[in-house]
Image 1 (tube, one colour):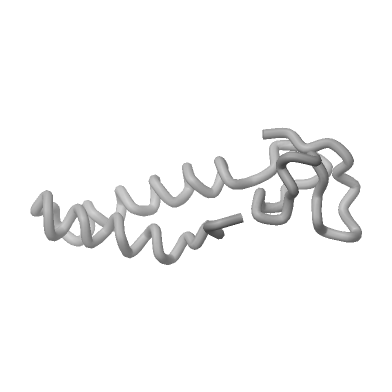
Image 2 (image 1 turned 90 degrees about the vertical axis):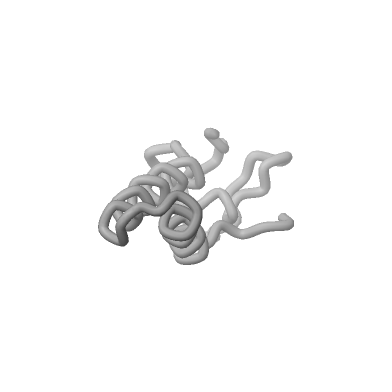
Length: 77
């Protein structure tokens, strides 16, 4: 795993991008950043209803969850 999802880092990068590069207001940039972070959080979460852990807690190639007490036996992307 080369990169672990950090929602705070993503939020800050998106806000600064829209304020600095696009000239959006702080409120509009924050609104966009919230939407982006929520979308990315859902992408980085196991879709198995019994699990719900972040994909950083999974071994993708062996399709197993790394959390010991988790009922997740099959990785769902």
